[in-house]
Length: 549
Image (cartoon, rainbow, N blue to C red; front, side, top):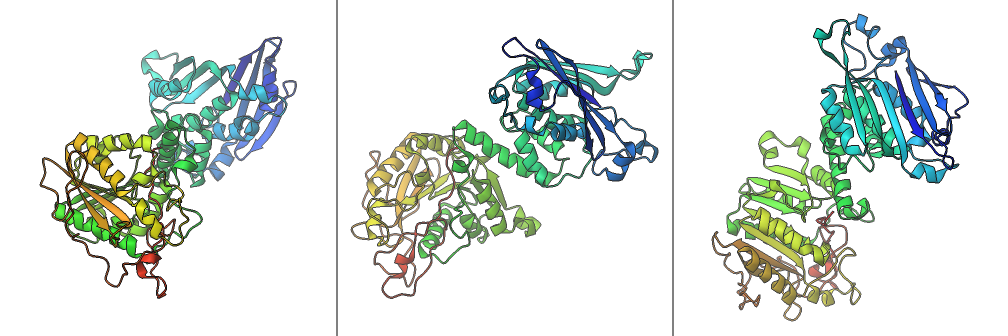
C-alpha cells in the first residue's frame, strides 16, 4: 500500500521544504507502528528542484483479522481473511496511517515555515492502486471539484495477458495542481475510504467530527457531499443525517459570510430550555391555532419553529393532518425532536410531523403546496435588508393559502417594568416595530404578492400602548376572505377600525402592564404575587431561529 507526494521548488523556496511541512527529514527513512502493521516514510528524491515523499504501509494480515471491524474490513470467506487486497490497495488503512504519520501536516501546522504551510504548493500525488467502487468516472467526480489542475485516472486491467477480461475495480490515480499541502492530505484522508466504500474499523459517532474537520473548506460545497458522507460513515443513516445537517449549516453560514455560532444560536446556552408556565406564550399559540382553524388549514408549516412548542400544540389537534417545523438551527431541531419524542411516535402520528433544516431567506421547493405557514416571533431576528428575501421565499415562492406573522409591539415595551428604556426584549432582535410600522410592512407584502391582510392583538390590548404581541393574518386572494374579526388593511396599509378580537385574554390575567418575556424560553412563568399581575410575569420569549445563513 503506497502513495507519493511530490513538489517542485526554486532557489528561494527549495522543494525540500516539503520535509519541514511533513515534519519528516528527507535524509532519513522512518518507521511508525500502527494497529495493523508498520508505516514507512522515505524520500526517493530530495533536491532543491524536486522532492518526493513516499508513504508505504506494510499490513499485517493476522492483525487485520484479529482487530478488523466493520463493513469491508475483511472479506467474508475464511481464506479471504488472509488472502485479499488490503495489503496492496489504498483504503481506510492507508487513510488512518496518513493521519497518524502526518498529523501536524493535516492540521496545516509548521512552526519552522508557517508561511509555506499556509500557501499553495505545486503538488503531484500518485496512488498506484486505488480501489474505486464506481469506476474512474466517480474518481473524477470526487477530485475534480477540489481545485486540481489534472485528475488522471487509469483503470488497471485484471490481467495484461488477457485484455478481453477487461478492467478491474482498481485505478492508478495521479493528481496535479497548486493546493495547500494540508488540503491535499485532508482530501485523501476522506476520499480514499470513500472510493473503497469500506472501513476496517467500527464507525462510531465521533467519526462525524473527524469527517467535518477533514472536510473543512471543501466538503460543504462539494456536489457529491451526500455520497461522500454516506460512504465515509459506512452508510449509518443516523450519523449521515447528523453530518449532512451540520454541513448544511456550514454552507449557509459561508453563503452569508457569518460564523456558524451566529447562525446556529436558537438555543440560549445561558437559559433553561425547559418550558415554564408563560401566559403570553400560551395566548400567542392559542391565537395562532384559532386563526389556522378559522382558515380551514390542515397542512401547516411552522417557519422558524425553534424548539417546537407550536408544532407540539398543533399536533394535539387532529384537524391538522400534517405539521412541518423548519429551522436553520440544528440544535433547536434536536431539542424539538426530543420534545416531540419523534422516535417514540406511532406510525400514524409520525406521518403527521416532520422537522426540516432550512433558511427562510432562500427558496425551498419542499415548502410549496401547504395550506398555511406561521412565522411566530421570527421576522424581528432578521436584519431588515433580509426581509425582502424572506418575503419572496414565503409569499412569492411557497405561497401558502394563509400566512400568520406575529412580532413584538415596541410600543408596549414601556409597560415592561424590568425592561430598560430603549432596550429590545431580546438581545438578538434586530428591530421591533410599532403597530403602524408593522401594518405598513404587512400591507406592502400583501399588495406585492396577491394577499389580503388583517390584524389582531395577542395578549391584553392596552388602550395606549396596544397589545404586547401583534399578529397579521394574510390570506391569498384566490382563497376565502380573511377570518371575521380581523381588520382589513387598505392598499396604503391604513387599517380600518378593528372589531372586537375573537381571542379573549386568558381567564385570571390582569389588564395591568407586565414584565418582559424571559429570554431563551417560549413559555413565560406565571406569578402569584399580588404586586405583579399574571400578565407581568411574561418575559422576553426565547427567539426562534430563522435568520439567513
